[in-house]
Amino acid sequence: MAAGAAQLGIRARPGPSLLRSGRGEPDISVGSKRRERTRPYCRKRYDYLEAVLMKMQGLNEFLEELESHCNSKAIATFVGSDGDGFAIDLERQGDRVRYGYEPGVRELFLTKLGSRCKPAGSLVLRSFTSETDPLTKLPVKELRGYVLQREGNRLKFEKLSPEMMFACQNTDAQTGEPLPLEQSVKYC
Image (tube, rainbow, N blue to C red; front, side, top):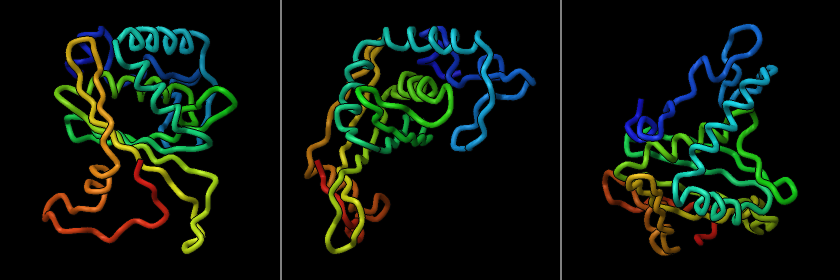
């Protein structure tokens, strides 16, 4: 169990007791299209988990920041202090944003944010726009980067400048050499 999650009194990864279908199998598989019915108590546990995590100061503000840049669809890629990555699709549905395609994915994302930002983590948000690049005919993406840090029960975040985001995305981390520029991207 991650230290951050332990301090909140929750599991860092939802285990079988949290995500069970009526047949005793895990209810979700992140990234798969398999869907199964959830028991009513699972929804209550998700609600409890979300309530505990939302008490973390700064988490709600960070989610509002992400959601404000999701006009239709976006992809958030999070890398925690342990180096473990997690990508989640976001989709605007009216005034709400849906996280992932399976029950419990939003809660899993919140758990990772809450438990893997000590000392720091990072997140890249790729927001898809309605614009099409005339050269590539691809949808134009807006890239934003954030540095996340957990201090006690507070999640702090700092948005990277467009110049810093450009440098981070177009430089080989191991060699420091420039990478080929990504097409159809705006750095925000």
